[in-house]
Image (cartoon, rainbow, N blue to C red; front, side):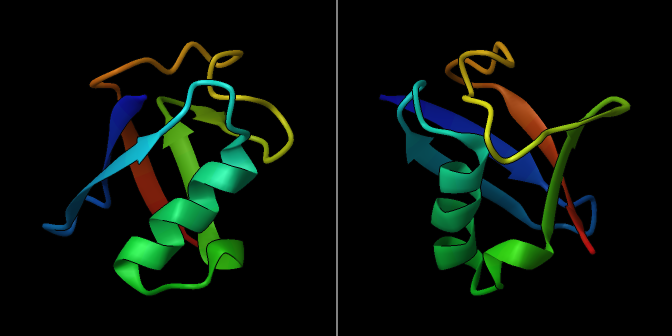
Length: 73
């Protein structure tokens, strides 16, 4: 189990517990349940990389205590 922090840069920081073999789409659903937003409106980025829903967190090298940028579409 890993814990990933998502920051929307508007003052909201959310910590989500998940598994490394979860897909980004699964992670978005967990995140959406915590912040009360539709998972379809969430865009996750790190730097200039936009994460795609069908790839696992481990493939993107997202580990425990990683930080992701949270945007809304």
